[in-house]
Image (cartoon, rainbow over all chains, first blue to last red; front, top):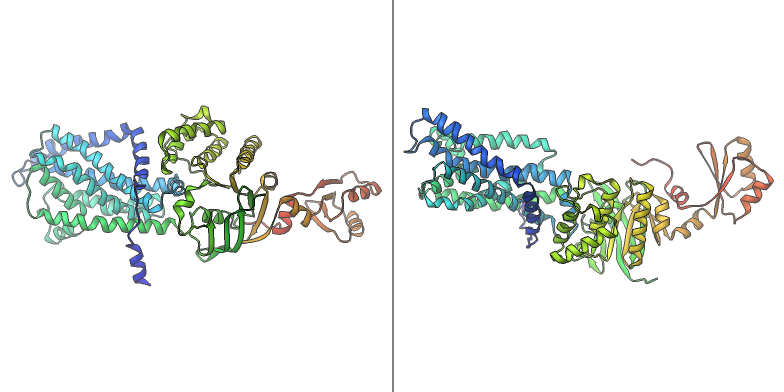
Length: 266
Length: 306
């Protein structure tokens, strides 16, 4: 019984090109409201770079040969990747599923529920790509890009965005109401925001916490890769981060689809 | 009437959380007819509709649409069905026109064709001036009409209408009835659920009455009225003396007392009640035609369903 439940949670979904029709619906809405969507990722990194980089940075010695502002710039990109997809696939998807009944309307057409959920996650990944590209532009304007490898940031954003979307969608599948998202917000997202090698090097943490951050927190790997691309500092240890993301993303992608199906198809 | 079977249910059941919502029902829907599912709240009407358009999986039994099984070919079936659900689920992020265009895209309808079709549908439902209006600004009646327009975007052979006029004013109801009749004339097979017996009598070729997950009666509205009630109903104000008199005059009749009024249901031919009132004139008496509501209440009782 238990093994059956586990295998049904990881059943591979049947997906067709129709996934993109769901993606296009969300893209259409985004285009209509682009002004509201455009300014937060533009202004927020400016505030951080000014307050933390110029302000706090005056009191911080160089980290691994970098100025403080240089150290936090790639983290701001990684954080925007995390925030935009995570919030899109928690609050955004929940509103469409629960309040607007948009999913119900879509599955009355030839599109399946699996395709709706997959389309939502691809859209979440796209949100990450858009936001982090804007942040990348801000970072570039501050003169904080040291390598042309930074052009790979949008690619990184899409894949890491897909990972955060998949994790978010698992929470959405379990959420009894919209207030529930406060829990993953302050138990998962906020600790990651502060403890994933974002505003100080991971090596400052006790060993046990370092291990925890590398084993469990997806943002740690996102920050590592973002920093490597911005500085052009590719090391073999990054393979672990890539592998971590490459394993976690498909597992949670499939799991979230099955969990959502279980929630919605009675 | 053309009697090609389009939808067929055999021993169809559906259970949620231990509650049997649909309990082994059998029915057929014929091509081109308007078939009504009537029943109190919780009777299983919406569940049945949702199984037809593959929204809910069938728990046991067999359900086919145009010969295809709902569990095996949901995409093909959904492609030929238009659904107007009970709760409003229009996309609030878009305008009226954009709602139709996005919905057309879900059906793989090419853009040019979608534009043409959407324009025609807005015209048909008298919404052509509302194309650029956001959903929030529509009245309830306009939202209902837009839901119907959306259900027709894929030129469906089958139209499922779950309580299409609930909460509407009489003007809006009559307009929707008019549109449903005209679709029926165009050859669309229509299944509708409703609580309004006048709506069912007005629109349906055939009605199925459901209660507690079962189909308890089936037939044309006229047949059902004739079979269960007769032609006319006599209503008189209640007092003990009148009650006795009526019991003597119509020994085979069913007498029902509700809100101080006696209703006499008796399979009397036309004119018998009138003769009775000639002999015993009462100012508060009235004779009216029997209707589907009488049948419905007789079969499903007067107890409230929550």
